Length: 146
Image 1 (cartoon, rainbow, N blue to C red):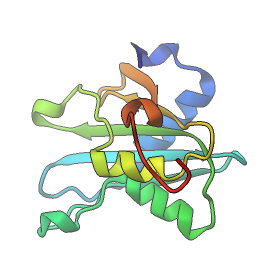
Image 2 (tube, one colour; image 1 turned 120 degrees about the vertical axis):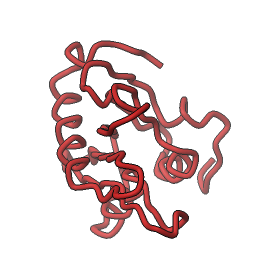
Image 3 (cartoon, rainbow, N blue to C red; image 1 turned 30 degrees about the vertical axis):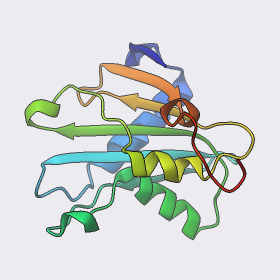
């Protein structure tokens, strides 16, 4: 896991972050006020986004990462190179880096073939970033091909 200034990221990583930030702007987060966007980079270069959707029945809420995966699956995309996650919110989360929850990590793990998926997490103020991978976020993960 590598922490660095977002300005030091590669141009392709910055583009993916911008797509995730744009997706976060369309999040439905009336309860937490914490919007999250995710952008998946497919093997063919297509970028697929998702945003969190909260619900009064909390368990019915869906995270941005899973929303992006479901969107990708619906159009037949199942091979990914990278994922960017961006958040924006008020309160204690302001300026922090949001990482995928356990359920999102497991769903992402399902789509690893023999390699891995790069994961780029950017702070809500856009200054800092963490570059990691699904395997690093979910060590000893399990799935259909593991």
